[in-house]
Length: 489
Image 1: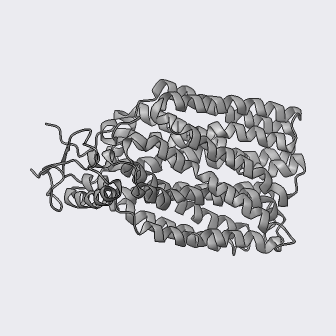
Image 2: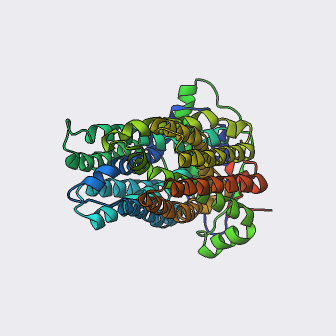
Image 3: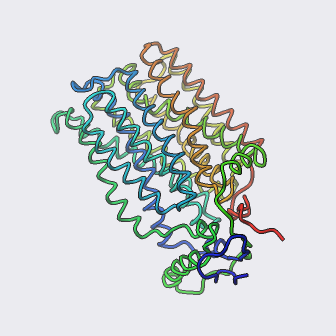
């Protein structure tokens, strides 16, 4: 049996070894290395926010484009195409991530995103636009699986919730960037709108070049190496991280808070094992994850993908001004995870997840009734949505945190992908198409019904978390869900 943290190279099938890699990662003080991980990997959510907001902000311009001239229903369908691509990409790349490693896949997915986003700017009809949006979604979906798993595995346990919510919340930094860009590209005095909306997609894709440069400095997840029978490599990666942290910390690193884990070399998690864990051994966590993901996906995608259409159709806001209304909405969504995130590590997951889902659900139902009655101006509607999603944003981010923490390391990326895919398919793909159809009907009562449905689903998720939620704050990933390769005496 190898010494803890000192095994050399891989181990043979069935051999037992010890490693203190998890304890060493969790004891690290906060450092520049962690900021690098957040910047290089967390940018995924910023890109997703940019993509989604561009379509939302540019919806009217794309609708009015002489070369595309999409109907409101087609705009909703292209949003659904993006999400279909995200579902397929998440499943395919999630499967590869658990087998080939986090690092290899998050390079592949960002390249796919880059090329597809640029191609979107050269679309010539509905079908080409929808196809390129689907490919862009596939890249982003794959990113969710590879990046979420890598971040959770390299951030210390005491800050995992705070960081995960903040990183997911940066979706809205991208949304603000997309909204700000729309104000420029849709201003006919600055650029022809037909060129402007195309340029927005091309520039957005080109930003991925910076991401690839940053990711060169992010190592493979030591936890992934550990569970794949490569403790020597995992140890060397952590040695390098500790060396840099120690030099900047200026004093000895804190002591380990728990002991080594015993692992046995085994093959990849099989599909049968994954199904058995999700449907039998961890059935309650599966129900919880599905509910949280599906409900937040419907609420978010239904509202946000049709945000611009509501403002233009019911409040008469010019398409060139939509960005001014999305900016405060994006700011509220970004602020929610940043301000409430630390409470998920202090007060705890269960109380905070339940509270944020419930508050946003109740407010959504109330705002739907106010909209139906015609009580609000466009700005008052924007303020209402901003407040609602201040709470809904950390709730949605916590869904990703929950599914990532729920299952063993060997299937973490695939688990994230499965829940993201199911939640997106059930809540996300149907949501934009449904709301696009409701808006096209032109009756406020129809939209109010959509708001009530979204709010009711958030309340359902709150109740499910209260009943089935579990305590994961400040615990190691291995303590929450033992690796399949963990060796038990």
